[in-house]
Length: 144
Image (cartoon, rainbow, N blue to C red; front, side, top):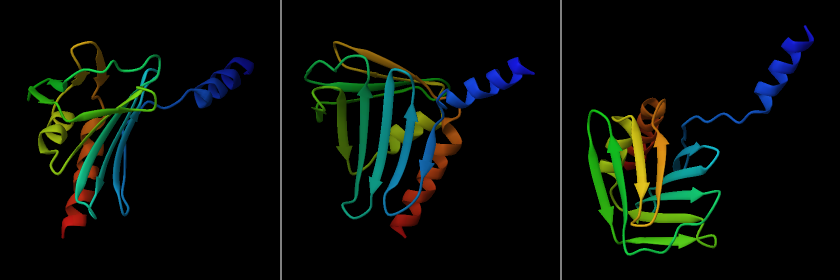
């Protein structure tokens, strides 16, 4: 019995690494791992999508471009020179008026690789699809 209680308490103390969408005035999609925090937003007042990828163990190195490669049944690679670093280089930020390819990549693939010429962050997309759909539903509701 003591082992069961300890096991349950340990599982409660362990963070849940799940994708999560929230609806409101701003739509959000988040994912947390031990090494990375992903925060995607849609603000209908601008209208603007943003993506922030925070590296917890060490900062991003400044580079002239940023890319995302999605691996799985609907492979796609997206690149941009339009990114910025914040939080002493820990967070890489991208903003755009459209994120259809990013959302397709997150929803219809198995793995995402966020990378620059100096670093790569791999993220599992297991469990992302239903939350990405909730995010899409939120953004569609904001547009109507």
